[in-house]
Image 1 (cartoon, rainbow, N blue to C red):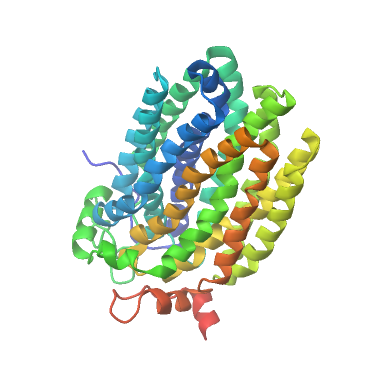
Image 2: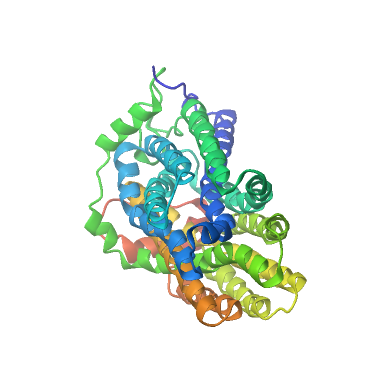
Length: 455
């Protein structure tokens, strides 16, 4: 029996608003669980190190095993989303990552832990481009970054909630219980998306937004998954080589690499630093970590709204934001007290998080419809490579020198993001001129803000 979906027509203002609200709420919940699942490992690293006798470099490799698979699966995930539809691939991801999260709680050796984290990373790796496609199909261009900013603020909120919830759980029941609990949340998110995700927005010609699920979502009783299959058949599929040859996308991927170097470097090692260098308990560390995480949540929403108002022009936000982040990271790394470390860390995270949505704004506005899934996957891929590189590099630096040197390494991420912000197109029209060229698929119509910028 097909899952019930909200009607795609008529496209009244109230129907549109409801579609956007429900889509944002469901994606927010799915991303919240996604991010919580991958944050748990950082909080239990000291417990894993003690149980399996792991040094900091090996602990960093446990984190990197996830990001290796996660990065490798971004582009295949985008291709799957473009071929089978965002909704269906999102459901696959939720199911498989929940299974591997639960299995992580049964790990009995370092090798098994690495294998399970790699499998978990592969399962989560197909989710981001699929979720991005789900959002694109259910929002209009002029509201997309604001909606996505709200969705992605779930990551920062997860960074607030996860340590506060997991620390007492681990203290009472052990580190394995944390993985079983988050796996259960993944199942709940799967059921919610399966039952309540609306059909894509209709277009004026009767098809749905972005050319996906064409004509099917408007049929009473039609399954959204089936509609996506039909849309996939009717839309010309991009060749992988053609997308990967778009050098401009890789510059945006490098920008995401710089941003995520900061994010995953801090997420991985701050709990261990507070515990080992300052004797802060896991429960207290969770409360301290919540402070910069709240700042990141606020900055992500603000960055999305600024992106919509600017119609791109990410350099205006990213360059000053990363300059502030770099200074704050240096002050944080050399702070003698826990209070100073948290204050400067909060400033750094807030300033860096303003860049998150602006990195996506121009590619999503400029990509042709058939390229949205795989194109966004290329950008996300850059960030996941950072998640694969930063944890073990910082672990090795902490082992060889100190945590001060390890945290100082993060300034490199701010520098890379700022430089790439200056070397990328600043609006959708310039992006299409640089990326699409005359021989590629027809580009999406520009948003009103982009049209105004190009006039």
